[in-house]
Image (cartoon, rainbow, N blue to C red; front, side, top):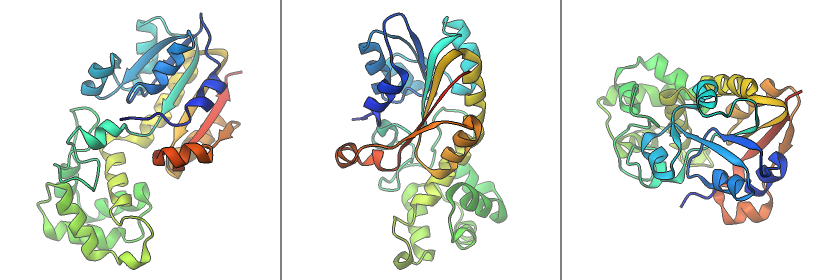
Length: 262
């Protein structure tokens, strides 16, 4: 089950009330949307993955199109926009698209059903380009070594194929996390154009939020947080309490940044 992170902090910062309008730009499992509605606010829920959007009754679209979606549904000049940049537990546990290195699934990693898959990238990009993706998006120290092994082992179609290749070239005694973690992160970012989409989404949010309204963004790794921090210039940084981290491991790396439009 998807448990929304920093829920109490989001509610406190956005201060939802009857008569106010909010956009949940990354609905995921719908937890934040439900909480905002429970406080009496109107919420426009957007979810890029069409299967997940259908399950939770959200608008199926990408947040890079937030301006058009907001206007279409009467949410331009809203009171706040929320971005939860983590992916849903549903993607790991039920989608079957290869988001987790703990499950043997096809290397897809797309939130939508369009564009290149992770397997397309591994089997068609040059060794240099693959190494760049691992280094830039995963901050992987063994980027060149892993990329070289993958090119030699082509074709690669499943998560477990990829995991075994990584284990074969990364000295596990020198890494504190699963050696596949950074590679899977990098591939997911490349497949879904996540970093460039964050910038576009934030620019769009600024256009649909009224003066005095707020934009709240939950990030899960430093690459995302740098973009948000730079865009906001000034923002309030909030981290999860220990009690939440203890009950929900996904929260341990979460950061919430909130800025007010002036």
